[in-house]
Length: 313
Image (tube, rainbow, N blue to C red):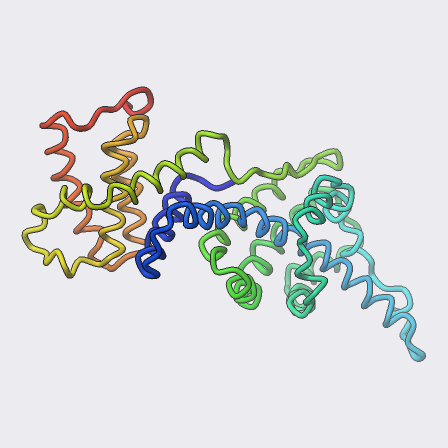
């Protein structure tokens, strides 16, 4: 579900938190790191469950207005196209999905449904919803296209939903775009009622899990050694004034260059430059690019970079 750049960001944030809180308990911080990654699964389940909650709230609303003393003919016989959307049926029949919701105790919307009610209003006022409901019939493809468009243009970018998720768990901030992209792809991939959504694992395989653990531990345990590698390589920069996030990015990159033989040099350089652009100061990527470029040349000249397998590519 998460890719290695995402894992690198999680490691970077954990090391930064260690520095800020002056907490040098490696085991404790590693546990926090792994938990923050595992929590992405809860976010995935929570966001996917929005669809069922929207259907439930709409059914409750339709039932309530149909029982009004002065209900209109339209209220007594409402348009059920939305609640009968075939995507909802696929989710309803997804036993593994419901088992995981129960096992991981994903109860957010049942404990606080204000966000769902707000989203339902946003959905029903959208042009996507109005156009869909205006046509009496629809095919499986129409239903899936409608749900995909609704998610991409109305639900995923909703500020109130984003604020709720961010406030509920800070570690989700960087996960939200990844999870939304994954869910939109999964919805679009459905081809028939026999299709199902494969619930993703956080780690693709054991190698990914070991990569995270090793990157964190090897960087933290060798911080002093790695800092010495770039100390005299920044003539135009005051070492003490280098942004702390930049020093962490440099140490992690040096760690990969020297201690991860299967990770190609080019991959390491590209990944950390992109992370610097997104998470550090405006000039960070230029600074980090210059330092790492010089370090790679020096390491190669001194035969310190030893790559094997995929690392040779």
